[in-house]
Length: 569
Image 1 (cartoon, rainbow, N blue to C red):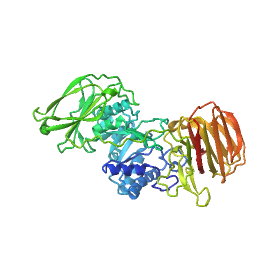
Image 2: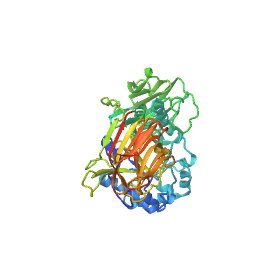
Image 3: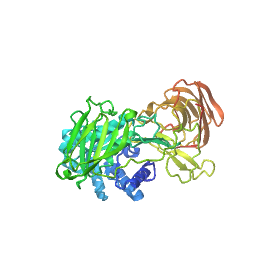
Image 4: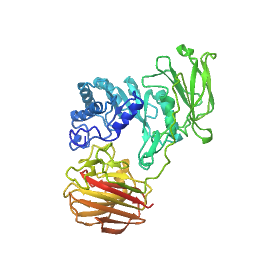
């Protein structure tokens, strides 16, 4: 909801993503968690708990809309990602969900640390009753006593977040087992699913796989995908961990799960310290060495005749295997016993399920850099997505827009649509900005038609060599060419506007279209307005490279059209 009670259930890519996931696995679980909130909920404060009913209403309508417009059932809803929770808000949210008949939607809290949520639940019976799952982020495979005393399900509701090479795969293999063994957590949720954002943004390639070139279609199925498969192909939500899980004598760990219907899956990992460090938290040293591990199946499991075997070995390319099916184990003559020889950095899955498979796909298109010449006139009558391709909004929201009043050249534009700063999760900028292109670009020309909607105070910019994004966006450097509705222009070396290269007067007003051009070549830059030079050969020594960008001076409406960028290096 960009504005008060503005309900639109067709923004962003998430609806599409959830529907695509459900096509592949109708039983996949869907969860919602606010990272930030629309500014109007805070009534001037950077705080979502000013009006508890209003915030609960906002979250509830999203869940109702998911079902009404997309036939998606949201299974779990969170409170506020890695930020404060409000005990009364959690209770109000539960009451509102129930009032709407959404009793089956479960609440997870607080997507931060184990405390103070666990102690709060032990001290407040009503709070204890309305929270279904305690979710902690990056718990380092450990929980706390209070969390266990609640008798609630414990989840690592955000984890991994590590470069998706073999070390990232080792990190995931280790925590998938040990989050349960050490911390009794029955879910581990990897952030993020697919690394589909510019690699030089924070946490580049911290997805289970990589698909960061929509212009080429290139993608890479990285090793964490196959490590995850060792668990996810042979268990399902609703399976139970057996109590007989633990650490191996010479390092590594094993877990066993059952569906309660006779199926058994055992997952063994021997990830070394060096090859399984996650991005956080600190991992104390441990040793893993060559060993033999003997397993004995008892009770009803003693009658299992055969176990399928899947194998991964991370590390040296010559000895590397990813999710390889080995010969199955026959147990009929062994009295339910079998022995595995284990080296370091290995994963074994032994299972009664015969449904495992290493999926294959045609080779993806070759990797290509972002096109050196790129144009977008935003002339899309009925866009499939609300946002233009390849633009990555860092602060603000840039959406396709149709000018009903303008039958001419600017009927279809890209518009910045937020008119107030959100209740932020991270340190968003006070300006809005969307970046695009190749971070390696140094010499480039950026041209764009711009339209300021706010008289007197409004302002817009185009930029090149923008060197930061994500949580670091406030300190982004680059070359920024601004024009303002009050008839002035600026050239700055940063988004915040502290480093001023040039300023002066130009014939600019709100509600008129202008063409801005920014040329950066080597250590110099120049700018034109409607083809006329405004400033020339201003020295720009830093940064040497970065993205192109568009944006606005504040959270204000503004439009952009006929975007063009041409890079020569």
